[in-house]
Image (cartoon, rainbow, N blue to C red; front, side, top):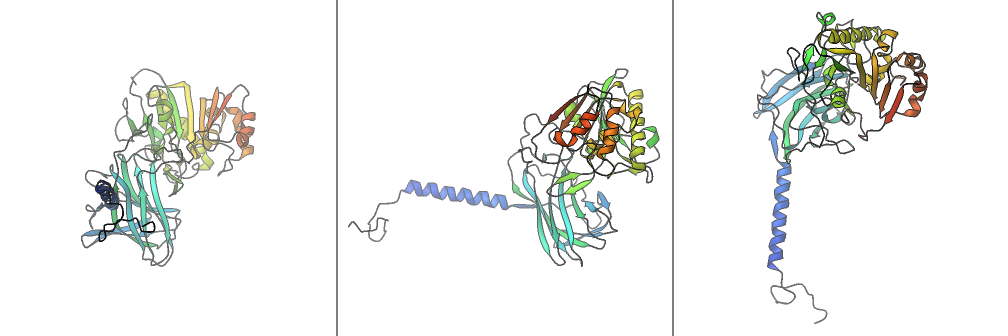
Length: 433
């Protein structure tokens, strides 16, 4: 009997009898796994409101149309002109994008043109730089599924976006020649996720709204020199703001336009600024988000420093600061300049470009790049000439190399206090603020 198999045999009755309780537990566990798997695979169509006569929120260098197949929308996009970026922002549902409990957003993209096409599906928050993307390069005739993880995090674990604050779904071509044609179908929210929990201390950057400036509001604002153009600034007055009182002012320039599905989301426009709100927690100071300006087009320069090698942006910055101090309680003795990426480079390239503007700032906060970075017109030899124009007290650097920008520090007034810090975010974004 020693060699007899000990597995229970229902025919012979030999071997240890199975434990019915254990079998039930295993069965229940299997059922739970199947239910969870089915839930994760559940897809909720998102395109019921997309009809042939629907108006896109925005089209940039693309022709677009919507058709229906088997009652499901198919979006056809064709690129126009040779541009770095082409995009379509999908029409917004009547009650907004309800994605708070979804794991991801996905869509099928088919290249029906005759050339390769690089396409990104973006899900974008209303909160500054926050977005998640999925991109692919498709050969003619190729179809790929793009999927945006709504619970994706930065390397340090900080969520990339709040799924309760989805502003848009955008489909983009990147560096694709004119005449590229794709069709997007099967747009859906996939899987179920637990309620999103905001990390302790995380702030919601207020959205830019239309309307007159008021305490606690962030609005689109045009200074007098902008009235006949498409240029605008973004003005935030703190909740305790009162007419006739003076407040410190945080002046911020945005990063450069850049859309990379696994790298960065940046529109290059002032409403995307976030640092000033994080620095102040929205209290005790006026926050002014300023554009780079292109006087040749009468519009915001999403890329680069603006027309006339940035001198038009310098003049605009001076005018905007004077306007806010004259009419909205800004204190000329307590002005601080900050920026991220291109905006951080501009702290020196624009903010110290001449003696008048250089004398304004009591402090500078730069994050991820700085003047002298060798990007566009910012060169180290010129940054060293600009640095002594800073007459303030302190410069605070986040995620910048002390070794790389040490020469700028040495060229600055030795009485200026420099601080160098690492955020730990591990990504090119403003979420550390």
